[in-house]
Each structure stands twice: as structure tokens, then as C-alpha cells.
Length: 228
Ligand code: CTP
Ligand code: MG
Image (tube, rainbow, N blue to C red; front, side, top):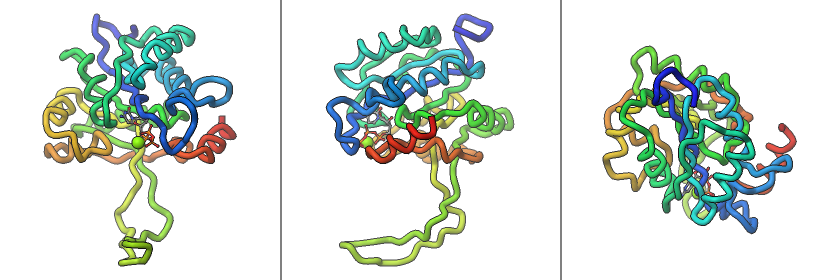
């Protein structure tokens, strides 16, 4: 494990426990083939090789804990401290991984295995606001398309795009703040920042990366593979 003390200052949690229903293959999305290795290998490898990260916890799909551990071993990912079994929702999976993070940790970075093309520059950008007093930071892209609210197949209204961005992962937080945020109800949370926002935390927005595309469908997987 990197860092100076026994416990690393910056912990990365990889949410990899989803089933990948929309991808529609015979295994969880984290184990879909991307460039000849499991999708999870990409973000795991990149976090392992990033000097900003001291320790890693993986939330694995139920029944896929052992392959996740073997993958970490194959990648010589020595920063991986634990592979826990994920939960029924993303937020539950993150909470289960977070339970492995010691009190002494300073920063927690939460990343989706479904976004394999993680660039170190994004992590660098995220850590700047944390040093400036923000509770958290997330990468986001401005929304280019015109947004419509739709009901029963018909447009209800055009939504004002002003000030709207699309949030990505990784998202970085002060560990203590994230711990308090996760103590509440996780039911509505689609990302970690929403829990911190609800708890009154200030979350900064930094430039996202188009290559951090979330793999949802087979077409996304093909696109990301073409970018490898
Ligand atoms: N995730 C998780 N635990 C869950 C559900 C999702 O760790 N119970 C993770 C996924 O593995 C993924 C990220 O959260 O890395 C974003 O979720 P999503 O893209 O929706 O993945 P899936 O839920 O696997 O896909 P689908 O919704 O199509 O089933
Ligand atoms: Mg899902």
C-alpha cells in the first residue's frame, strides 16, 4: 500500500456490483470483455497505478468475489485491501465498500467500474477543491442537447438547459463528510454527491471527460473499446 503511514490517506471505492441488465450478456457488466480483459480491470489497473490513490476496495457482484480477487492478483494490484460483496443498489454497494475504510482515511474517491477509461488528470482536478474547503467534488459535462420533459410519449415541456450538467464518476469526498452522508437513508441516491448535498455539504464541479462514458449498452461497450 502506498502513502506514508499504516493507513493511506486516499481510498478509492469501485462500485462494480451491478448486474448489467441493459448490457444483456451472460455475466455481470464488470466482467464484460473490454480489449481482452474484464471491464473492471481497466479502472482497477488505472487506480492501482495512480499515485494519488493509497488503497482500493472493490464492491463485487454477488458470486463474483473470487474472480474479483483473482483479477486484482493478476494485475498485481497491491493497493486492493478488500473485495466485498455488493448490495442491491449502487448506494448499498458503496456503503458496504466504505465500511472497509478506516476512520483515519482523509479522502474517499468513489468510481463506477462501468466507466473504464479513467484518466489520472480527472483525479488531479477533483482533489483541488477538497484542498480548498469543499466537502466533495465531481466531474461533469455540459449538456449539449435540448432537454425535454416527456410523459406518455409526448413532450410536456422544454427544460431550460442553463446551469445543467451531467455528473460523472469518480467523485471525491472528505472521508468524514461522506461517512455522515451515508449514515442517512440511501434509497433515492443515484450518486454519492446527492447524499452529501442532502446533508448540506458543498460539492464542487470540475471538468469531466467525454471518455469517462458510462458503459450501459453493447453500443457503449463497442465505443469505449474503440477508444482504448
Ligand atoms: N452498481 C453496484 N451495485 C449495484 C448496482 C450498480 O455497484 N447494486 C454499480 C455498477 O456495477 C456500475 C455503477 O454502479 O459500475 C453504475 O450502475 P449501472 O451503470 O446502472 O450498472 P448496472 O446496474 O450493472 O447496469 P443495469 O442498470 O443495466 O443493470
Ligand atoms: Mg443500474
